[in-house]
Length: 187
Image 1: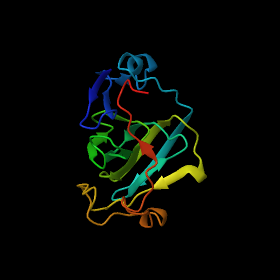
Image 2: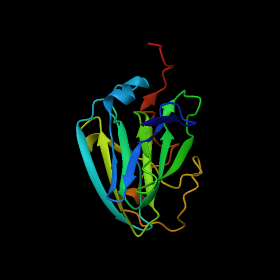
Image 3: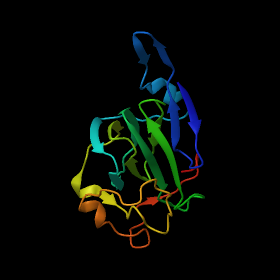
Image 4: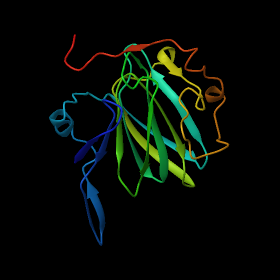
Protein backbone atom coordinates (compact mmCIF):
# COMPACT_ATOMS: atom_id res chain seq x y z
CA UNK A 1 0.00 0.00 0.00
CA UNK A 2 1.32 3.42 -0.96
CA UNK A 3 0.83 6.23 1.59
CA UNK A 4 0.90 9.81 0.27
CA UNK A 5 0.94 13.04 2.27
CA UNK A 6 -1.38 15.93 1.41
CA UNK A 7 -1.07 19.70 1.95
CA UNK A 8 -2.81 19.22 5.33
CA UNK A 9 -0.49 17.68 7.91
CA UNK A 10 -1.91 14.34 9.07
CA UNK A 11 -4.40 13.89 6.23
CA UNK A 12 -3.16 11.02 4.09
CA UNK A 13 -4.12 9.32 0.84
CA UNK A 14 -3.74 5.57 0.74
CA UNK A 15 -3.48 3.69 -2.52
CA UNK A 16 -3.63 -0.07 -2.14
CA UNK A 17 -1.84 -2.41 -4.48
CA UNK A 18 -4.56 -3.88 -6.69
CA UNK A 19 -4.04 -7.26 -8.31
CA UNK A 20 -6.39 -7.66 -11.27
CA UNK A 21 -6.95 -10.34 -13.85
CA UNK A 22 -9.83 -11.79 -15.86
CA UNK A 23 -11.50 -13.00 -12.64
CA UNK A 24 -11.66 -9.56 -11.03
CA UNK A 25 -9.37 -7.99 -8.44
CA UNK A 26 -7.93 -8.38 -4.96
CA UNK A 27 -6.57 -5.69 -2.65
CA UNK A 28 -5.62 -5.23 0.96
CA UNK A 29 -7.93 -2.39 2.06
CA UNK A 30 -6.41 -1.85 5.50
CA UNK A 31 -3.12 -2.58 7.20
CA UNK A 32 -2.35 -1.30 10.71
CA UNK A 33 1.30 -2.17 10.11
CA UNK A 34 1.49 0.01 6.98
CA UNK A 35 0.00 2.98 8.84
CA UNK A 36 2.32 2.39 11.81
CA UNK A 37 5.29 2.39 9.40
CA UNK A 38 4.18 5.93 8.46
CA UNK A 39 3.84 7.14 12.07
CA UNK A 40 0.10 6.53 12.40
CA UNK A 41 -1.04 4.35 15.29
CA UNK A 42 -4.83 4.34 15.26
CA UNK A 43 -7.15 1.72 16.65
CA UNK A 44 -10.46 1.60 14.80
CA UNK A 45 -13.55 0.55 16.78
CA UNK A 46 -16.42 1.04 14.34
CA UNK A 47 -17.05 0.51 10.61
CA UNK A 48 -19.80 2.47 8.85
CA UNK A 49 -21.39 2.03 5.42
CA UNK A 50 -23.20 4.88 3.68
CA UNK A 51 -25.08 4.96 0.37
CA UNK A 52 -26.06 8.26 -1.26
CA UNK A 53 -27.51 9.37 -4.58
CA UNK A 54 -25.93 11.74 -7.11
CA UNK A 55 -25.77 15.34 -5.91
CA UNK A 56 -25.96 14.45 -2.20
CA UNK A 57 -23.57 16.41 -0.01
CA UNK A 58 -22.90 15.19 3.52
CA UNK A 59 -20.93 17.39 5.87
CA UNK A 60 -19.03 19.07 7.13
CA UNK A 61 -19.03 16.75 10.17
CA UNK A 62 -16.70 16.05 13.07
CA UNK A 63 -16.84 14.71 16.60
CA UNK A 64 -15.29 16.11 19.81
CA UNK A 65 -14.29 14.62 23.19
CA UNK A 66 -11.82 13.24 22.14
CA UNK A 67 -12.50 13.47 18.42
CA UNK A 68 -12.63 10.83 15.73
CA UNK A 69 -10.23 9.54 13.11
CA UNK A 70 -11.82 8.33 9.86
CA UNK A 71 -10.45 6.14 7.08
CA UNK A 72 -12.78 6.60 4.10
CA UNK A 73 -13.03 4.50 0.95
CA UNK A 74 -15.58 4.14 -1.83
CA UNK A 75 -16.70 0.63 -2.65
CA UNK A 76 -19.12 1.63 -5.44
CA UNK A 77 -19.34 4.89 -7.37
CA UNK A 78 -17.43 8.16 -7.05
CA UNK A 79 -17.30 11.04 -4.56
CA UNK A 80 -15.43 14.27 -3.97
CA UNK A 81 -14.08 13.85 -0.42
CA UNK A 82 -13.00 16.84 1.70
CA UNK A 83 -11.09 17.38 4.95
CA UNK A 84 -10.93 20.80 6.66
CA UNK A 85 -8.29 21.66 9.27
CA UNK A 86 -9.97 22.82 12.51
CA UNK A 87 -6.85 22.74 14.70
CA UNK A 88 -6.48 26.22 16.19
CA UNK A 89 -2.89 27.39 15.68
CA UNK A 90 -2.14 24.99 12.82
CA UNK A 91 -0.26 26.45 9.83
CA UNK A 92 -3.18 25.20 7.68
CA UNK A 93 -6.00 26.21 10.07
CA UNK A 94 -9.22 26.68 8.09
CA UNK A 95 -7.77 25.21 4.89
CA UNK A 96 -9.25 22.26 3.03
CA UNK A 97 -8.08 19.40 0.86
CA UNK A 98 -10.31 17.54 -1.58
CA UNK A 99 -9.80 14.37 -3.58
CA UNK A 100 -11.93 12.21 -5.84
CA UNK A 101 -12.31 8.76 -4.31
CA UNK A 102 -13.90 6.04 -6.39
CA UNK A 103 -14.35 2.33 -6.81
CA UNK A 104 -12.14 2.71 -9.90
CA UNK A 105 -9.13 4.54 -8.38
CA UNK A 106 -9.26 2.66 -5.01
CA UNK A 107 -7.91 5.72 -3.14
CA UNK A 108 -8.68 6.10 0.55
CA UNK A 109 -8.47 9.21 2.72
CA UNK A 110 -7.18 9.10 6.29
CA UNK A 111 -8.65 12.01 8.27
CA UNK A 112 -7.20 12.53 11.77
CA UNK A 113 -8.75 14.15 14.83
CA UNK A 114 -9.08 17.89 14.42
CA UNK A 115 -10.53 17.86 10.92
CA UNK A 116 -14.07 18.19 9.62
CA UNK A 117 -15.12 15.78 6.89
CA UNK A 118 -17.60 16.03 4.05
CA UNK A 119 -18.25 14.57 0.63
CA UNK A 120 -20.51 14.94 -2.37
CA UNK A 121 -21.61 12.18 -4.72
CA UNK A 122 -20.57 12.44 -8.37
CA UNK A 123 -21.92 9.11 -9.69
CA UNK A 124 -25.56 7.96 -9.82
CA UNK A 125 -25.05 6.40 -6.37
CA UNK A 126 -22.02 5.88 -4.15
CA UNK A 127 -21.33 3.45 -1.33
CA UNK A 128 -18.74 4.50 1.25
CA UNK A 129 -17.18 2.31 3.88
CA UNK A 130 -15.28 4.08 6.60
CA UNK A 131 -13.53 3.14 9.77
CA UNK A 132 -13.81 5.28 12.93
CA UNK A 133 -11.49 5.45 15.93
CA UNK A 134 -14.28 6.24 18.41
CA UNK A 135 -17.89 5.20 18.67
CA UNK A 136 -20.56 7.54 17.38
CA UNK A 137 -21.64 9.93 20.14
CA UNK A 138 -24.67 12.15 19.39
CA UNK A 139 -23.78 14.60 22.17
CA UNK A 140 -20.28 15.04 20.71
CA UNK A 141 -21.19 15.42 17.04
CA UNK A 142 -20.61 18.80 15.43
CA UNK A 143 -20.92 20.31 11.99
CA UNK A 144 -20.05 23.37 9.94
CA UNK A 145 -21.73 25.04 6.98
CA UNK A 146 -20.84 23.09 3.84
CA UNK A 147 -20.64 26.31 1.80
CA UNK A 148 -18.96 28.59 4.35
CA UNK A 149 -17.10 31.37 2.47
CA UNK A 150 -14.32 31.08 5.08
CA UNK A 151 -13.38 27.74 3.47
CA UNK A 152 -14.37 28.49 -0.15
CA UNK A 153 -14.48 24.76 -0.91
CA UNK A 154 -14.73 24.16 -4.64
CA UNK A 155 -17.56 21.62 -4.45
CA UNK A 156 -18.33 20.06 -7.86
CA UNK A 157 -22.08 20.38 -7.27
CA UNK A 158 -24.06 23.63 -7.55
CA UNK A 159 -27.30 22.73 -5.78
CA UNK A 160 -26.64 19.75 -3.50
CA UNK A 161 -29.14 17.51 -1.78
CA UNK A 162 -28.70 18.22 1.94
CA UNK A 163 -30.17 16.78 5.12
CA UNK A 164 -32.12 19.15 7.37
CA UNK A 165 -29.23 18.94 9.84
CA UNK A 166 -26.60 19.85 7.23
CA UNK A 167 -28.64 22.92 6.26
CA UNK A 168 -28.41 24.33 9.79
CA UNK A 169 -24.76 24.01 10.82
CA UNK A 170 -23.03 27.16 12.08
CA UNK A 171 -20.34 29.04 10.22
CA UNK A 172 -16.67 28.51 11.00
CA UNK A 173 -16.60 31.92 12.68
CA UNK A 174 -19.51 30.96 14.98
CA UNK A 175 -18.09 27.57 15.94
CA UNK A 176 -16.13 26.62 19.03
CA UNK A 177 -12.39 26.07 18.83
CA UNK A 178 -12.58 22.41 19.76
CA UNK A 179 -9.07 21.40 18.69
CA UNK A 180 -5.67 22.95 19.36
CA UNK A 181 -2.72 22.25 17.09
CA UNK A 182 0.28 20.56 18.63
CA UNK A 183 3.53 20.45 16.71
CA UNK A 184 4.58 16.86 16.05
CA UNK A 185 6.86 15.68 18.85
CA UNK A 186 5.79 18.41 21.32
CA UNK A 187 3.87 17.84 24.52
